[in-house]
Length: 169
Image (tube, rainbow, N blue to C red; front, side, top):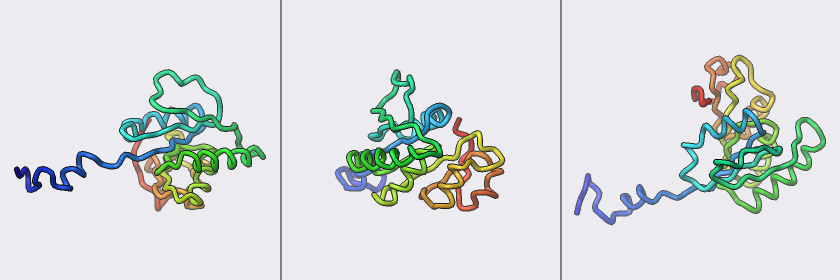
């Protein structure tokens, strides 16, 4: 039987129905960064995914996937611990994609993603209206993300290679 130019049983029709599910690593700091990551849930919920956050938080209710907690580190020596933790997570769980909204874990995971050849999508936070965040600036200028999204048009001056995505939160 033929439907719309594709025969039943044709590889093209089967491929449309059975696309490969990705395994997505969702990385963020706790608080606003994590809330913005959850706003993207319709985009990743059909895929296998897990969360990595840098502190304890009470959000296990309603979460649809495993949550891994890493050491809370900002601009300090604990970033070295984060490198070890992130390396272990990426080696053990082998995600196909990393999506991050920042802050400091984004840089660590972005650097290690290069090593593991995992593409990264970075979303600059909605609170960065006129000027880039430090994390966004680092991810952008170190070219740690294959896709760099920002939410306010004024940031085009700071991120000319980035993509304006509009507000997600």
